[in-house]
Image (cartoon, rainbow, N blue to C red; front, side, top):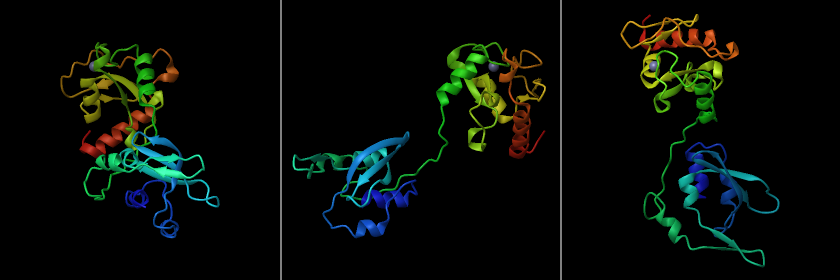
Length: 222
Ligand SMILES: [Zn+2]
């Protein structure tokens, strides 16, 4: 009941209808048949209530999952639930006080493979300067993922930390013909960015246009 109320409160993807839970006997314990990680901090539980109701799903945070009592199946098929003392300790507030967690909705992403790909196609070097120290390189998104940008290589560019920040803030402008301009001295080494060998991997010029439009909106200049 608590976990379900939390899922409703936190507007998670899956919850069970309140009416259904209220109709169950007070001591009733629903069994989690299996669970799967959906987001890094959200689990989807498949609940067994009774034979008529199959595949009921409930989304819970990782923390809440940790506080659920553990059930052990007896030989006769019934379940024994461990006293929830240990799990009680994991609750963020004592005495059964309830809490609400914020759900961060983020698109499913393969951040690491995007980084690997971008660093690889730019030869492990900033496209604007000579920095090739891997820990200082970023796979910058031209259009932010939060603004609907994709993890496609055509929406990425390899930049060092400084040039990534400059690009993000509009101090460094990459134009549709891949020329680079800046009104401040930020160590630009050539008039054009270094491009991948394969033209199919080039940044999409429409993405660069969109980036400029977004910057115009954000900073009201250019
Ligand atoms: Zn750089």
